[in-house]
Length: 196
Image (cartoon, rainbow, N blue to C red):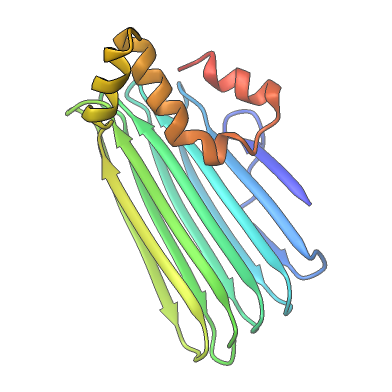
């Protein structure tokens, strides 16, 4: 099952259980011009179920995004992967709180969580708090986070090939976002890219 939620347009559920579907693929998008608080909790209740959760957020005009994501592995043998990517500029701010909880007895869990943000200027900020709570043995769990700027060497390379600076920066942003952006249908990609 594949679900796409765009903040400000779609109602984003606060809680979800995964027991009847083999695979749930969810993409949450927070477009430019919209501030939000996203509280999303997913419980994995049956061995073999898989969660593929991704998010995009844009805080390029002073917007504020606040994510509280909880994935609870309550039985063993389930898989979850999370990837959130954000672009922040002009005073935009984001806070990402992510928790992977592996319950006692939920061995053979596989879970990953990644949150990466790009700051376009010094007036923007991003806080990221990935967390693991593991109460079982025989698990593969990881989390990671980065907050950085556009790569100056890449920008120089593109500029040296005659690409104007604004277009070169846009290319870098699109490359950074592409792992999540590619999950969206073409019309939703266009909707977002027209607003960058």
